[in-house]
Image (cartoon, rainbow, N blue to C red; front, side, top):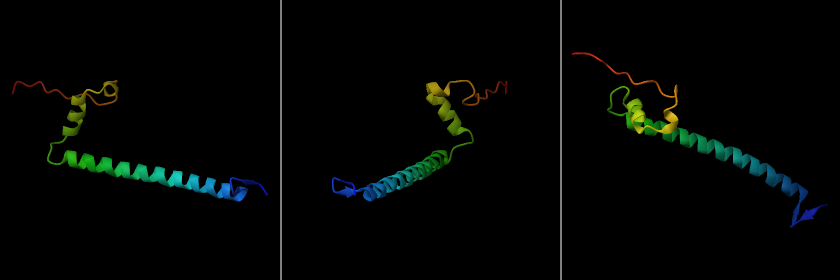
Length: 82
């Protein structure tokens, strides 16, 4: 029987399995909470604004990675004499 720091081999197995399970549960919990938070933020930000307002806001941020071609659709510019 191998004993290290008062723990046997079976104890290390239990600790390893519990650590793996907790990592999976914690990562899923963070993912779900982050997704729900993002959805609530978008719904709150969209409330009372016309269609396309959030897309215009993202364009106005002018973040470098959003300036790459094809990341965001181009802005529609209306050229009309009226």
